[in-house]
Length: 455
Image (cartoon, rainbow, N blue to C red; front, side):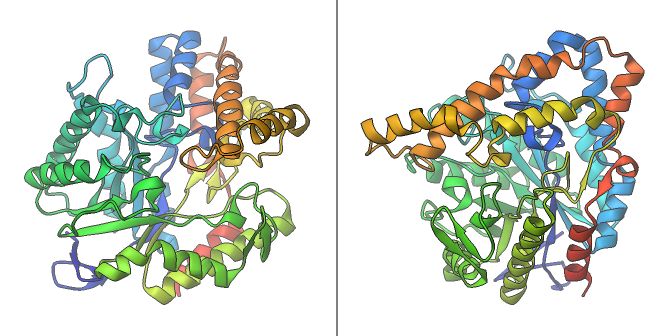
């Protein structure tokens, strides 16, 4: 097993290990831009079940979990030099809202399989609870159908999360290829008053179930604010996320300005220094749990995005920071590889419509349907000039409510109808489009990573 020793992770023989790898986004916690659906995962699954029925929906989703990551994926990542995969999971694989606290052990089936495959290739896993009961942040990636992080408002949700982590930690307490647990992805406690005491409670509960594994704890406000920690827990990594503004879908040229803010390598380094101040002041390991640009298909723009990534990796190397690039596999926006074949043939036009409407937060430039939405933005700016909602302000909040919730949820029936009248073999073929051997590889990105990891 790995342990924290000062600013490093070490094996039992005190050999230092710097965890560098990728996130397995869109697998056991599905996300709209990764597999092409609209809105949040639970709403999507409900819409698809209404068309396919429970049994055939289960056939499709289980096959998708099986095909999304196989031994070939583990071998590819190990061959690149990756030594860690951060695995986001959704609590709903173990517990349903209508039967709280009742654990379904089948939730471990696919997670055990993938952790085992990675371990066979010498790759560690970090288990990341990406979606908690009640939603721990305000966005789709916590499977949130609203903009309210109810997790921080109700002790009931917190009790369920603690209980689930007791079960997960007990299950993996002796597993040597589990590097540790990332129990709350990108928390968004708008008061900042609940999260600190909750972490105290959660750490104690996990340690009681598994005293050995490392804890990877995200700061508040999407892993950027570490002032909420009241103590430096033992054997703990405090995880920062480090997305570059110029690498977003709405990012400008690099070097250059994005929404009035200059970005070049020097600015990337200043941002990293600011975001990692707590870790450096406390003498704890540096680990970037998420980062990485999105790609546009425009060769000139994408060349700039690759340069952002090179510069960030250079900065992390200089500081000895570990990292986990977001994300491994998707339908074309950000992954090292992306699905093709029957899935893209069937859902490609729908994905293009989502892109035209800007219905996915992560893929939106916030300029889609600009003529239609401009009057509303002007109204908000004029009538409510002091409105500054958590976490990212008025413009982002308005886009979230209109594009990424209202329009996204309106698209759900259209997505689900694309499953209508498909036979079982056709459903399996859709899921199998995510098999690595049927995916398209983003070769410049693969080359860039292997050059960094294997140098």
